Image: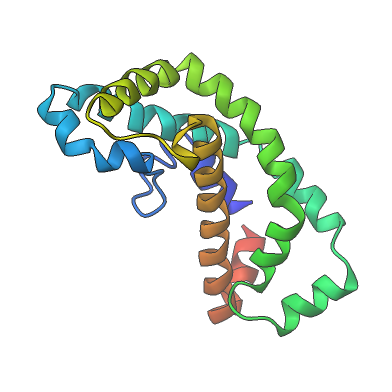
Length: 178
């Protein structure tokens, strides 16, 4: 829940530093040239808007993560107890990643459109293609890319928190008492 609370908050992804959603690879590859071509502001707006769209989607993850806990099996519990620093996160990911992706993607599409990020992306991709670079794979659909990266961030933060609680079990008790 803490991962969703921190990343799903206003500016949660954008200000997270290590979990900020990166520009799609093709735009990152052409970033220097795009800036030289006067597209610095458009790139910045796209980057920030994509992160804000991710925050909106992540904020809605809590019910699906709760449902995932209810679907845990005894085998999952054994994996968590015997596993390493990411064992619980891996079980969550196994049960929740697909349902979250299904829930995030339409939210991401709407948020990207509402924030005018999709239009900026399309314009920038036209310019990048004019430079001879062609979109492939994850570059082709911004909402799919942003959805995947948002989920990577959510499970990444969960993994960091899990590692912290495994190293400092008393911190878990303190968090539960808050």
